[in-house]
Image (tube, rainbow, N blue to C red; front, top):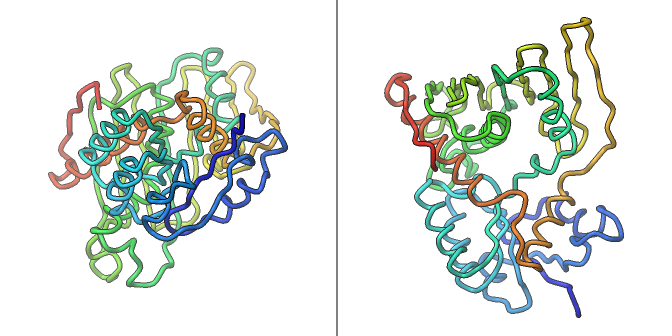
Length: 320
């Protein structure tokens, strides 16, 4: 049986995606068996040569082109966030379920080999007490870029890089927070940020007693870290979410020492493409599901609601 499939890339082509398609994951890679092509907006969804699409579009276009692709019978890998709103994400999930197609957010951090190792050590280090997750960089793009237009971007730093910190926090805590308090820093002195937030910060409380803090920012330079505080140690990932090369440190209390485990380097992108390819070809569930994308949008909307109401707490239900 010929197991080759073709995936069309709608929008800008990430260089790393092309490298993955050229077999950087190794000779047994499912991604290598996919023929990857760059196509214009909508053409992959209409082209019978393609079995799946990877949406690399401004956030405000995700729902429109995901719906178009699903309606044409294509599996969909979508850049983060999955949509501009939780309502759009729910609509996409219903469409994918009805069509029996894969709808997967491109959350490559779930394919890290370092994060599972760190989480696997928690049981030996006591109970999780706190989570601190931050992602940010200094925004240098000029005015007029689509990221500064909320109709295309959904929002500012919270939509652009917020999902990294939010997904890590959810995965470590084990679900959605029950309460969110947040602030957004506006900057009317910079025309780029008059309609989108350059910085958001939050505090979250989870049903298991874990408290989390975090931020997403275009205002500081190269923040990319996760710290898990336990009753007997701390676990630190910095950088936390590069495509390759996470650094893990574990501080122990008895005897006092800092351990720095050495793990093989693993490029998350080819591994993510492999998982998507297998799910599309075999009808299995990918490691990252659309429910992950929906959960982050639910939290993003809670952060925005809290910020609009001067950091008033927003209570969430247990289900997204």
